[in-house]
Length: 289
Ligand code: BMX
Image (cartoon, rainbow, N blue to C red; front, top):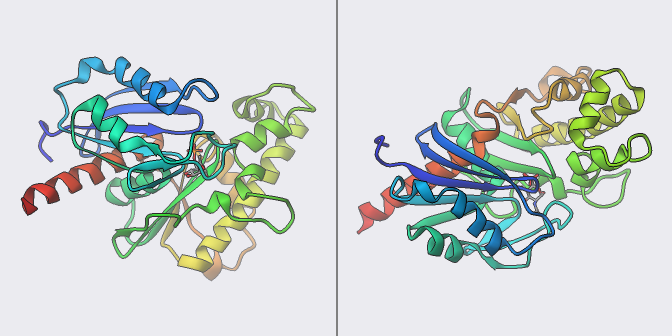
């Protein structure tokens, strides 16, 4: 991609919305806003985001948008309303194309991030990406191909020792909720800070979360045998969390043990991945014309 061919990349998660101008793996500029959960409609959230980046107009030729939830035929729906409560089949692509006046593509946030790490991260071969954040998202790249649709929605898988979706018992929402009796209103970040001060209750919450994440990683290893599981997301990349998962994998026989690596692109994996997918799609469309 030449420097002039920047892509506007948006990543809308359960906690924050990130807009970035991306060239290859370089993020030239970025803006972050909190996701206005429970306030207004996704159309209004997108309008607010586009208002923030109005000065980027003219700097990009195409748009990629990565979102928490599933995108089918350009329509965005939630799978777990606890992660983000949006209407079913919101016309995401149409809205983004209307606001940007540019061609656009849309995909799931974790799948986009998996692609970013595959293209520009460390290592080679098959990978599974796990974002442990508000929820738990995942993306699978096998034989150089990103799997789409429901593939990789590990956060929605069911557990044996609890009711409902795995992410509701592991991710940021879980960590914050479990802290209520000890620190009412605490955020997941504050639980990490409490654990760093050596507070036992916080240690116990993070350890339970990490133990369940470790089981998920073992199951992923047995399902896909990827060369690595790339860990991203605000919780996944929080200090010490990956080490906690690894501690629960120590006794797993070596052949069965997943190799965990941190997301090389950090919290930019989603925007870099969706920008690359958008660039590929636009190039292909031009070739076919
Ligand atoms: C949920 C699901 C996934 C998403 C994952 C991580 C919704 C709204 N989201 O499993 O599609 O990839 O959370 O999302 O159903 P994040 O917002 O925590 O990044």
